[in-house]
Structure formats: structure tokens, C-alpha cells
Length: 290
Image (cartoon, rainbow, N blue to C red; front, side, top):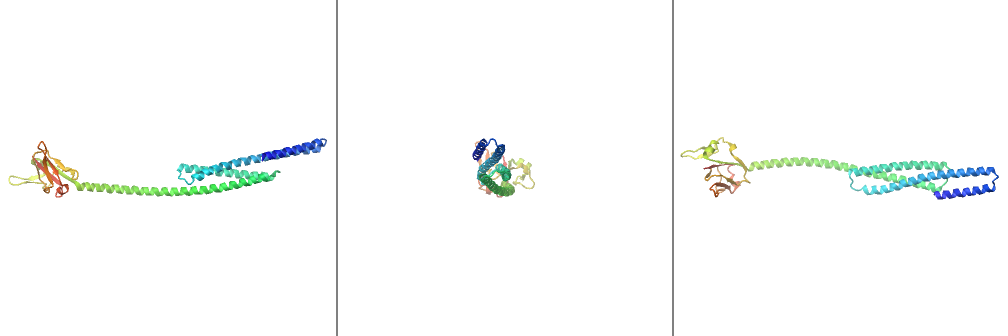
């Protein structure tokens, strides 16, 4: 566009110069020639300024188009919060650029209307760029709306996740509490107690009472020292070393559910062969040794 304008200006100057040469004595013609040169130079300067503005806007549109392609790719992807913020900033920058370019085009249109420059090509370029700006503005507005909708959806999902997390936390606490209670109940149901000692030791703890020349001592009659007993899990402990060569069970436990075994040193070990049945009649086991 600039080359065409320069060619026209040169042609005009040559024509005017030729005329001046032919009528060099005509002062009026010389003045008109000078005036025409100034007018052409002014128009050329004005045209160059307008073309410079149009070039800048063209570059803006090109940059926006490239950024727009990136945003189109990203808008449907799963984006982090920082990436969404970057897209919003890019869109805001594009909106400001379009606003600036639209203002410049409006000013350029006013200058063109007020000037002596008449160029259909220039007018078409202005109209095309204005259409491009409007199209880009509509597209960015649509993308902003879609991004806002996605952010609202993400916020709603985040709230739902928080609620579900809170519910899961409550359920977890309840389950842990129930599990602990069940474990405690299970432990209590399977906890049994045993002790062993000589007759004298057991009587001192009120675990054995009575017994004389013609009567047998009895176990656990009345109050007795429970601290003397050892607590065990009947499912886990099925052998009790007695460290003595003689032993007798003083509490009530079914026959056939246990046996005594002697080691190499002659000491006895009580082995419980059927724990569930062995402890079915009493949770306390008293063994007199010695």
C-alpha cells in the first residue's frame, strides 16, 4: 500500500515539475506547484501514519489468534488452579488489547473521514479489522463464560468432596470406635486368669480355704486376692509351666481337656488341649503345686 502511494506522489511531482519548467515565468503556477507538493507530502505523511496504525493492529490480531489457539486447546483440559488463573489473565490481556485496537480504529476512521485521502482499500482494511476485533471479542466472551462455568462446577465438586470427606471421617471414627469396642469385648470374653502356688501360699491369698485331716481345701470361697492371678488370652496361651514336680488343679475344669507333661528336669507343664471347653466352667484356674 505504501509503495503504491509513493509511486503516485512521484508521478505527481514529475508532472508538476514539467509544468513549472514550461511556465517558469508564471509565479502563480509556481506557488500552486509548491502548494500541491505540500499537500501531497501531507497526505503521504497522514497515509503512512494510518498504515502504521493498521500494521500494529494487524500484529495484535495475529498475536491474539495464536494465543486463542492455545486457549482453545487448554479450556477443555483438566487444569490446575494456577493454570486456570493464567488463562484468565491471558483472556483479560486480550480483552484490553481488543479494546485499545477498537479505539484506535475508531479514531483512524474519523481521521480518514476528515482527511482528503480517499482509499477504498484502506477503508476495506479498517472494516475487516473491525470485524475481526468484534469476532475475537465475542469468542473471548464465550470462552470466559465457559471457564466461569467450569470453575463453578469445580467449586461445587470441591464442596461435595469436602462433605464426603467429612462424612468419611465421621464413619471412620465410628468404625474405629466400634472396632475398639468389639476388640475390648472380644478380649474381655477371652480373658481368663490362672495362678499356682503351694497350699500355704494360696491360703495366704485367701485363694484356698479349709482343708484339714479329713476334708479337702476349696478354691475361691469368699473374697480372695485377684491381684495374685495372671491374666491371659485363652486362645493364645495353652501351656503353663509350673516349675514343680507335683501339681493339682483346684478349680472346676472338665476332664479330658488338659494334661500334665513332665520335662527332662522333672517339672510339670499344664497343657490345655481344648481351651474353649476347658474354660467353660470357670474363668479362674487355681493350681496347687509342691
